[in-house]
Amino acid sequence: MKIYACTDRGKVREINEDSIYTNESEQLYIVADGMGGYFGGEIASRLAVEVLSGCIQNCDEVDRTILREGFALANQTIFETAKNRGQKLMGTTASLLHIESNLDSGWIGHVGDSRIYRMRDSFLELLTKDHSYVEELIDAGKITREEAFSHPNRNIITRALGTHTLVEADVIQFPIQRGDLFLLCSDGLSNKLPLNDLQGILVSDASLEDKGNKLLEEALQRGGEDNISLVLVEISGTEVKE
Image (cartoon, rainbow, N blue to C red; front, side, top):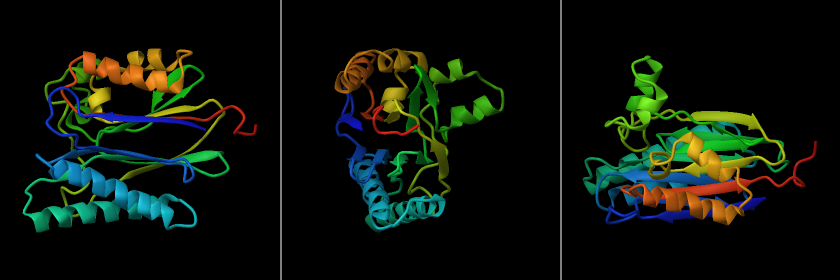
């Protein structure tokens, strides 16, 4: 297993409201993108990471129920914290990747528009589906995915942790193959680099660290208006039995 992670404030924002979590021993990786103004989003994303990682640490085996309960608890914690602080809006996205100890399969938990991609056989696939206004327009056939990339309302999300009393997380289980490379990222990256550009960087022969640094560099060069966070997780060929 190879891991690389980085987070950057970007060129415009005063603070970094993203939070990331990587723990190779737990095989758990999380990216959360907070919202809610000065410090509010930073607190929300940190709480999401703390609660979700704590739920995984305290369970014997990760399954669909554990993940849904973890996201529900994270949502409740952030919602109540905002209420106690008198914060009108404090929420966060959260995308979680857990690799099972046998390396045969993995789990994704997801709320919002932070994303998880998988590179397999030089093909990059988006595994999560954005909970966003433009995604609803795509589903309704009103715009294309290409048009969504530059849509003026592409930052409006329709589901987040902490903004309502209840939230439903998307939970996915999937098989893992040797050589799989996973990218978790906040929209500070995905809003700047379309899938083909991400794939072009990830398919290169560069080291994992160089790939991560190149992704960050490209997002910054293309404006860097938002916080930018990414986690790369590579399953080495020797780790998975065929």
